[in-house]
Image (cartoon, rainbow, N blue to C red):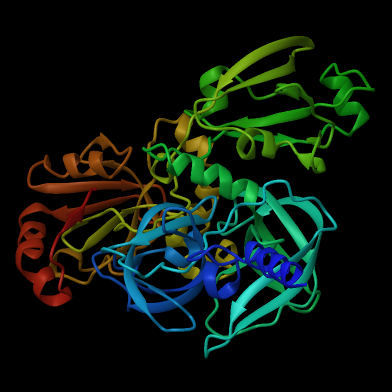
Length: 493
């Protein structure tokens, strides 16, 4: 009898976690992340906005890394990691961030000491299938863990953070309890990290989840610096469902294929020779149907954009089968990564100051999406029409030789700009007879006024603006710094 009791006790001990290692749970595997951030003012780019604070939850990964969304980490200038139950804190910093894929890793900014003792890093579940039961982990304000159950039931492509960037997204149904101050929520499947909850519709009880497969891609790239990110294919595509269109394109009625309606200069497809009017039939061996979708072996029917970005790395070769003028062709496309600064109109500007030049009170900037969004949620209807058009038709300007779209964003009242105070939203073509392709070219052009006068040629409005060189210099040196607290008349970084 004693032997049996001893054996049972031994089995119980073997079943327990080893000393210093705990089973994954909210208390042991997720942390509060407290962030103070301060972005720049895009209307007055030499100034910063008021500081703001955000709090989210991060998933603990091996190596004392904490995974959060990039949305939480944007423009951060102070970060703390906090244990929810004990309130113990440590300062931290952003190790890597990708705003397109909406992920960031945070690491301690000092010796962690015993901060992570007793905690258990989460493994990734990259084999998740629909119908799986998931848990969304949170904390009460007092540190008590809270778990909500949802069911993963749908796969699609959608935006994570930036509205024009589409990636693989999981959708789950079920009520998610809301706890104040939780900006980012880890999603768990059988003790493993299944993804990060990025949106929740309380009316329909639908959660959008950034899946662990995309997290895995991000972490592998972070582990092999320098971080490159996902490639930029650079085409716009249109369905070929219409029978007359298919006949015009010389396509077989039974086969699929999606029409290339535009190719962005300098991006992967353009560099490899893809042309407007091509019809893409296959991408890396996957047949593309007339709607632009393909049959994914794991998730079923998905948009072909997942092949170009979600399943590919920068530096990979994308093999295309296409039809051009009725002839079937094969093409290899080396996939390139384009940073936000490589676009004509930057799609986002985080963690850096906007570029600008001030001349006698005339404020020149390079057009960015955040500037347009100053007009509010309906910025497409409320912002200056020509600027909105340029943002939507960037290829037109790139083909004309522009690198960036320089415009007059506003005029600061000053002696040099009397009568010009209402000018804004004007695209700049030339300064002092020189073509303007970006702010660097403008900064060079204003060094060479003609007969003591700066001549600025714009698309609309007065067409030509004249500034006195001597007065502009004086205003830049004396009037503008004292009146508007401007410490630098340009930022070209």
